[in-house]
Amino acid sequence: MESLRTRIIDVQRKPTKCPQCGERVVEIIYGTGEMTPIEFVLEYRREGMVGGDYIPRNPPIWACSCCGKRFRKVLPDGTPAPVKVKMLQNLRKKPASLIHWTDSSQEVRLDSESHHRYLVTVTTELGETETLNVSAKNEKEAVELASSLVVEGMVGVKGIFCLKTSVEEIPLQK
Ligand SMILES: [Zn+2]
Image (cartoon, rainbow, N blue to C red; front, side):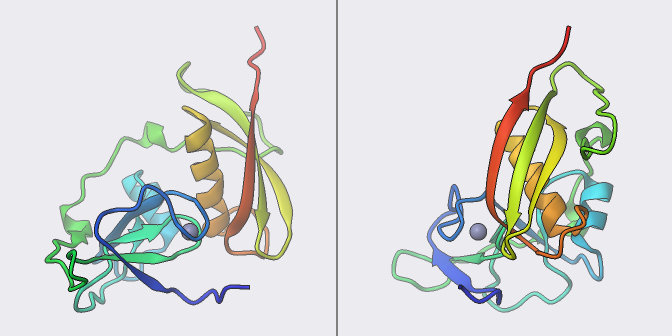
């Protein structure tokens, strides 16, 4: 099994998905101090990986939302590309309505008709399987939500990232 240690991958542009696990690649937000991923999500209501206060020379600016692989932008000749790092202090907060999750032990509350309900089954690197009942705009967002809840330790499993996810929409009752 691949080491959990973060590895930096050189890329010329933002990968559409992680070459390691296929999950979404998000921006790394620097200047987050001791802020945890869940604090970041709750306060800023947007996706992103907390990068802390240490900004290395030639910093990686993207990260996988699931396995934590990081990506550094390089020029075609492989040398580091000049990049502007995303700083927390320059970030705009998104509206609270974007936060929208639940688990199977709770009632699902739908704040808007644009949300659908999904059962997302996640399997962690330790082989634990948990089904989350989330509401989201679409399948992709439902999976992202479930993945981030695992990463943030909100699900009550010991694993720290999801190896596998599957999603199924729950039909709305009339
Ligand atoms: Zn990944």
